[in-house]
Image 1 (cartoon, rainbow, N blue to C red):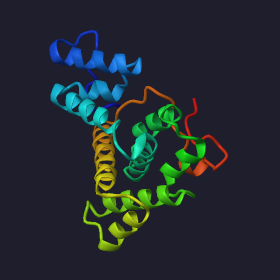
Image 2: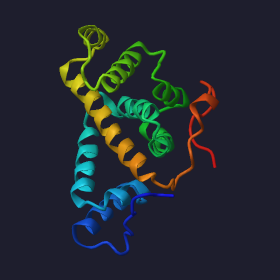
Image 3: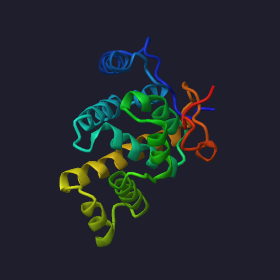
Image 4: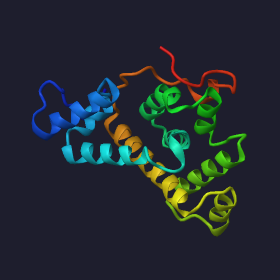
Length: 191
């Protein structure tokens, strides 16, 4: 049972209503996680601003979403993993890309380096070693892109932690457990 209230968009007023309308316009629906965030217009507004700004990240939407998938798996957030898998095709992710994000391993060396670095950031709470930093740099990532990888981890952690605290009710199909996925299976949702 969900532990934090979801704001009903029909009953929302003022800034909360404006923000929920923005979510509706952007996505065509208002996911339950946005309804939970709407308990604080400051939080929902900040989340929307952060998410929108990350749309301009040099690392690109594909890698940004793979990092968030990896973070969601590490943080055991079923809601975020499910929603990220559901939107993955619109973000340009193939089944293999989704699996790479969820497992933190990619056959593409550059992507693999970014995913390994993001895992190190998460596991070490940002206190990465010089070798870990050198590895992501040697894969071709500059300081700006490294900052974006860290931001992707942080954005993922925010939604993971909030949804884990709230035990946010899924309003989308639950993602298959990663163990049930293979590189040829669509490692996404089932009904």
